[in-house]
Length: 73
Image: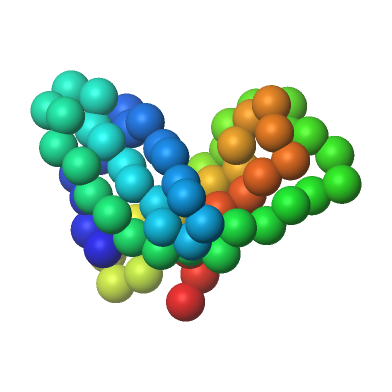
């Protein structure tokens, strides 16, 4: 899935993840593996990598929770 850069609100229900662009209100749906860590994440962190000139999100660690969304395929 390809999304434009910007600020997004992230929500999930099981493996279904919804991203809503805060500026345009455009939403995108995808799937991810939900992971639980032993400790809470102190801040939200987006881990990404560059592949073929595109920036791909691998994982989003949700600050204030023990939850990470793993988008690796």
